[in-house]
Length: 398
Length: 101
Image (cartoon, rainbow over all chains, first blue to last red; front, side, top):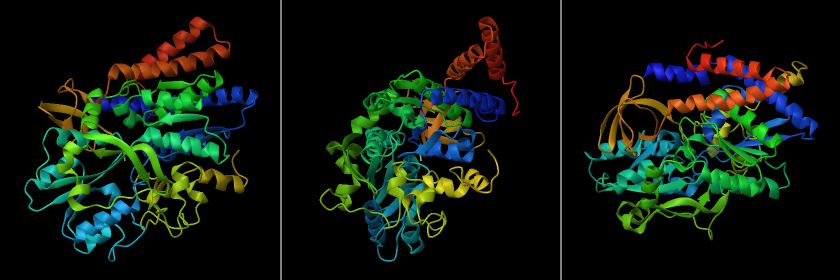
């Protein structure tokens, strides 16, 4: 294992020479684009892990001023509506055992239930809440338990098959129910790209498509997004060299006026995706209009269990009240800018609460909770080229 | 949340696989029949989402190589010389001979 893995890491991570060479190429393409009249190239990612790589490895500070990397909707925890968390806390207080991913354990609700405003609070008040690594681990754990339990089914396409397969193959024991809060990325990308245009902001010039989501859905859905908005897309891996190569590929595509999708993360992504995983996913779930925290409803952007799998559905079993279009209200703290941050319309540092009232230890907004929420990533690694901004204000650098 | 962790497949038993994350050994779901012991895979939330195709690593580098070739040609380097330089560099990279510089 270590040989193959070390080889990959040596190529794409611990490789300053590759990074420097690609950076040189990026500057060359930007020079050409500048001569063509481009003054701003806005590249949006749709994956929290890409934002993590960007900030952790300081990718923004390697790029010319004209290239702006923007985080789009790429974190399923950040966009989980508050209503679901409130309902799960209510059920936990009523004695239902709850399984949840660690990433969503501290996800705040807007309204308190009793005195709890997240699952961690409810656990500290005695509710039976367990953090698990996977749906499979919840299944294994529940086999020896009594009563009824609920799994908080957060995730994008990457995670959906890991819920679908055990349900489809009958691995799920009686008494364990799935609350599907699954969301789909291409419809959200479509929404975010349209939002930038509608709000009269600098339109997005190119897309870095999510590598692991695309492992499941393939590059094909991104080809459609790309053609609809007339901008190039590259499906990228998650090592720093992957991202730099993807940026260089996108700049070349912009220069050559090509749209459509290219795959940089070829070691695992293909055009059609993981057809077996997709089969499980669409045997068990169907697409539906779904609510995104702070944003509202997006058509065909959620997955709910098909009727034949009602016996696993927490919504029916426990009478979970889901958000509806009629009753939808923005479910964020009044000053919280997470909705704009998720859509790439604002940066975390544009929010008055960022690192003042809202910190990773005491998050107020959902983007500060998940390890891959944009605000949390920026808070922990000082992202967004803040070091650069400070250096500039002191007259250093450049 | 779509974090993927590379692992090596140790055993396959029906829809389950035993994988080694580099010390931690765990049972995970496997969607694809073509996954075999010895494969390097990406695991996400207890499921193998795909197999890492090592041949494609070289193809990714070829994509980079093409970009590099363009650049060398623009700098006025002779075509054959530029091709040779790119090939040699990629060979060095994939043979694992690059250190962290």
